[in-house]
Image (cartoon, rainbow, N blue to C red; front, side, top):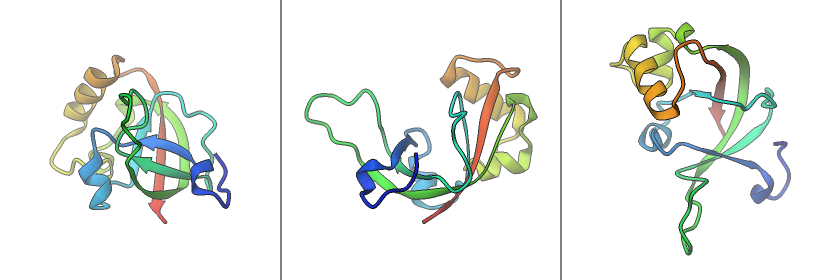
Length: 120
């Protein structure tokens, strides 16, 4: 996960659901299952889709980001302010948790990794 001279060696992170928010740079926080090794200062390559590519499909790189802060917390701890940072300014925390759980097959008590980042 460390930044190297070759951008191909930077770990990819998918923004399949929030591609537009990433492109418009209105998203500065993401919540993930796992990602426990993420550390402030690490560089990641935002991609439209990283896994499940069909034969012949290529990874579409969206841009490089640098992690600013990382913490583990139950999903239900999200705030309305963080919903906006996640790229959903009109969504309240309950709706966000419902959406996240539906996509990730988890529940509101699931411990997630909150990653705050900046665009490079």
